[in-house]
Image 1 (tube, rainbow, N blue to C red):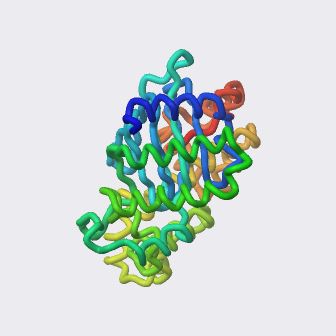
Image 2 (cartoon, rainbow, N blue to C red):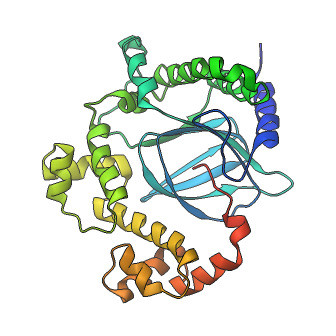
Image 3 (cartoon, helix red, strand yellow):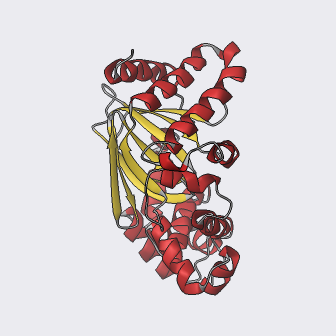
Length: 305
């Protein structure tokens, strides 16, 4: 039987061989990451399982800090704006990780087959993110999924089976309370998720808590409470992060039009845009944009959360 050490060593080797700057692999929903820098970054993530094989990462969501290292995993169950940096990553010893999309179409049917006694006892109002030990069974399934990158002729048949097994391991392990919400159409997470998706797609629009609450099918007070529990921030804080991260991406292609970019993402006041941008990224938009344009190679590398 494989040990955790053996599995992690194998996983590291496969990731190092197949990692690309865009994280993509020929297997739908499977991503592999090799990062050689501890530089801070901001990203928008989606429902995802990430298993760290080498190195580690520290994440900030609202005022909550999460950290995971080799042999541990991250579970994210909705779209979130996350800030973070890799730990001890260098060209000599890069951070290596795999990610697998958590798809409701895979998880929902498994809920019917999961005995309630195997569900972890979790409180309501769960945050949409958790970290902890991956466990031997989950690592074994992850290793078998990654092996298919060396055997593409088998992937079409075996990858869906292993994806289903990975979802099963999550549903019957310590993350079941969190992952179960991905597959439940009437869960609190799914209701809040509708509002989260609206904000992501309409970040430049003004928002009213009452309208978002109606979209989520909740009272305004209940929605605000659930939204903060899921995202660790208020709806307005969430929107601000989405706006500023989008602005940072736009500044690369709209050099010199700082006020225009601010307006494009929803800021009517240039001074407010400059102030909030600097607070989030540590430099005013013009200075940060100049650095972005002179440092495009490292920033072309995408990151798993």
